[in-house]
Image (tube, rainbow, N blue to C red):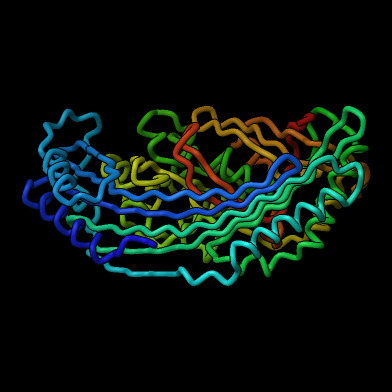
Length: 466
């Protein structure tokens, strides 16, 4: 059972009172508690794991400097003493942060949202679902040498209070499924996958057509065994929404995180309010996008989630901000202050990042391409916020010849510079999809995100074997 939020509220109010009496410029405290259950199966083992954590994160701003502290304790006296010590530090200013209210007045607001419902399925029923998914893939064809299926569900409660007078609570359920098919022929190994994740309970399982999903990824993994390696060079390229999302998040989005600007590590620092693409290209980061994986009600700084337009009709319009970066750079917070849990400090992080759809039909993109590459289904990507480089890989692709898909291709790598790629985009479709995932700040501090968009055509891009 979760700890009673009324008891937690009393502790938060006491901490805020300590901050106010210590005369810090600003202070906040967040309490988080989470319970996660995961069920996994492959040909080697079947396992069920449980994970719980809870604790407080305290933070203050004093004469231009932020200090933070994570506490894995429920002892009110201990927490109070830590709050007093935290707020009595002697600043050694690194960045000249201003008091948040001098940037933009943040009026006190209150919210209490509990989206968690009682489980519809028992642990045994969910375990059987995982076993069924495994069997459907593993025994689809003798060339499928392994299959893996993992289901995870979590309930996460966050309670937040600050010296501005806000008190916030959100209790969100998250549910995720990943199924992978591994095919082998001789020394050649290929795979395909299915992934779905939402702010949801176990009712998400009923929305997945398991027979359709498992047959599709099994067939694709087998087909890739005989697929060709992609050619290397510069070609006209079509990306599906999955690959477009990798560009929006990995290649472009990380450069919009304002903490990278403070570190002088953003390739976009000199492009603010400048044209970087044609007027039909718009990229957004939206933490208020329904029940998508990267959504929430408020971030880890008590800022409401919202839609932030990064590129507006080809013009770079906005960086993403936390309270800290906003107070240094004289902007307003954008609802992108996020942390993995109470032990991690807040960083500027993306949410749901995507290209907005326009009006082209997918079929129209292929017209006129004599020889090109169609990139399908993202595999992985690497960020380069300082250099603005692209290094993203598709799970598969197709050769385009005389306006038609012809040969199936194995994993394709897309490289180059993101600003060059944006300027070479010449068509954006009206279809749209988002892909769930997790994003780390460097190699740690992972948070749920989603990325995606419509099919997009690029006049010329660098492609090679992935």
